[in-house]
Structure formats: structure tokens, C-alpha cells
Length: 364
Image (cartoon, rainbow, N blue to C red; front, side):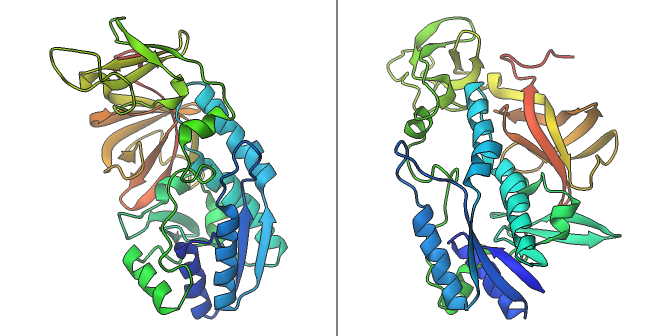
């Protein structure tokens, strides 16, 4: 089988290519340029990653390709990322990047180069059952990335291999070291791919004007001023600048809401303001092409690495209403809610609203 591996310059994609080559496949590597720096944001790691990917391909003796998807990334991922932050939400661009770039543009480019399948270094699994493809968690619970892949459908999964799905990260690094891959000790990338290790606030300020506003309590008491509502997320307690605000309880302050109309950041010391049992989600995608049923029970995650939470999902037109068995903390609009049946990822959507105490859904 001719397989095009998305070589990112990291250890995971390198070992994915190594395993496929050892399995007798005709393996080639492709590096994706997804972000082009300009004079505003000059601290890019993409060139270093490209050189590392070239070194891996050379060590494995496989053909190497480069494709520039930066224009598509700007149009299909980054503009939505900015729009969400401008609206006071907290987006998850990794989900959109996987759907639009890594498993659409990359897949198209691989097919144009004659590949039968594509492969990546994601920790997930694909299983075919009765002619349908299921997306399963990776067996390494600490590295499982099915949360970020929930928007993939049947066509993408049928064409994709995840060689690391049955592996644990320490074994991946061991294989890389034993094979003499030059990136065996390279640190894992963290955060949003186009931001990297740089300061998030400085990066975002290059593209969105910061609009300072009041920091106030749900009761309307003004405590101070924030530097821009887009810089804060629900549940945040660090960097609020409220250390000098005295209160008899001496408890920390948490971000519990955003008043988009007035531009105020809402904070409180009682975490009950962050708890919710219900949410609505839009932009639904289903791995099987449709929801399991109009109403069904399953587990869900509202953030990466969260433990599974029991819930009931009711599909209403283009949205889903999710009711949790236990209260959830800091469920954040703009993030993804992802549904599971055991190890099988069913799909997910974008969180729109919750029934949290401040600014949530009407209770019923």
C-alpha cells in the first residue's frame, strides 16, 4: 500500500512513518506549511520543524514532499478563530484544523500524488465494522486525541491510518531512539500550532484590538479593569489583577461570565457560578453520518483530558441539548462537546450556551 504520512517534524509522526515502512508499505512523507509568519509575528518554528521532517525522511529513506496550505488555513481556520475571540468565546482551532486541513487538504494532496491512504501521528484508532468505520480512542488514555478528531466522517476515516493508536508514548520514544531517528528526544509541541511557545496575549493583539472594560461581580460591584475580554476564559483565576481587592472571605476570584454588550468581565468567589448541568451545542458532526437516535444516553467531554461524564443528548433540528447527570465546571462556549459510547467516538459539536448561574440558559 502506498501511504502518505503527514510528517510534522515531531516524534509521533516520525514513528508512524517508521512503523508503516517496517510493515512493508511504500511510505512517503509530506510536510504541511499551515502558517506563514509576517512582520507582526516573526517567531515561527515551522522552518525548524520542516528541517526535522526532512531529516526524518532522510533517515528512513522515503520520498519527501512539501505543500503550502497556509492560504486555506487562514480562510478556513484562522478567520473563524479570530471571529470567535472577537465574540467573547473561546474557540478550539485544532478541531477545525483537523477537519479542514489535515484530513481534507492533506488528503486531497496525497491522492493527487498517488497515495492510497494517509497516516498521521495521532493517538486514535479506526475500526471497520459492517462496512462502516468507527473512530476509537487511542489505548494510551493520557495521549488519546479522539476529542480533536470527532469531526471526521466516513470518507476521511476510510482513507486514514493511525499507526500509534495501539501504542503508549514511552514506547513511541523508545522506538524512535532505537531507530536512530534524530528527533527521538524532541519536546512535544503544546498549545495552538500557529502560536507555539510565544505569549498568547501579544499574539492575539496583533490581529484583534484589545478593548479594556470593567471587572465586576454578578451583583454589579466594580472591582477593577481588564485589558480585553478576549484574553480571559471561564474558570480562570490567574492574571485577573485583583490581588489588592480585599474581601473578608479571602477566597480567590474566578471568571464566571462575560457581558459582551457592556464589555464587562464577570468574576465571583463562589464557584457555584461556574456549575452547569445543561448545554446546547451547534455545528454538529457525526462519525457515522447521523446521530445514533433522536434521544440517547452516552458519555461526553467538554474539554480535552476531562473524565467521561454521563449525559443524555436530545437532538433538536440543527442543535443538541445535553443534560449531565452531575454538575459540570466551567463549560465554555466555543469549545467542543464530544460524545462517546465506550471507546467509540460518536461525534460532537460546538458549545453555544449552558445553564450556568450567570448568563446561561433559562432553567426548566
